[in-house]
Length: 280
Image (cartoon, rainbow, N blue to C red; front, side):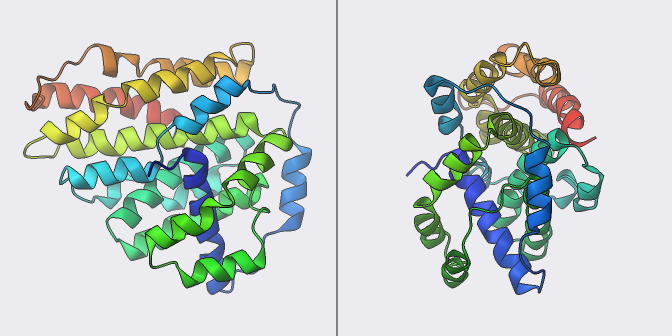
């Protein structure tokens, strides 16, 4: 069963609430939610077609599962350092890095790296709270998710019924632009993790396939960003993301054959340059 990006974000934030509750972190800061809401500008309403494109984007969990199936390893140092979370002070940087950390969270959870998973849970929770988008969760939901937190399938089934409320929350509160930032961050970080693992793999055939198969999802992402060409801030994101185009147009992989190390490094350099825009 394919789970969309919004559902993946829902899972990440719900589990983040669980983590902070279990550690005595208290409840969501209502004042932070209100301040974040007050700072939001009037945003363009996305067309149904654009919303469908967002809905169809892959989840970070899907990408990291593909990497695991490709026998890629786990390297903590290629993730965005949890220590960076406090330097994101604008709505844009917080939203983009909520996406980035969601991908890092999925990567760590997929490989059952418990300590690192907890670190990224804190990051996603902090940014969700600061963006004012963690308020859709009720105490009874937290208790229910606690019960299933060791069973990913049960967790997905449980939170799937609140996907609509999460989606509606972002839409009704004029958070379309924030949602696009989050989706962009998750997409770029997933690509970066894959390309970084690709340059150290003994046989990069399968990992290269994972990267190049994201061409269709990249096209969807750019179609969404194209709608914001008249927004100066969003235009800068479009320009950065446009630089990824050559990854999907200039590199051809023969079926069942690995990419040369030279090409693998070129791809990694291209993606890293864009990723640096997100995490700086």
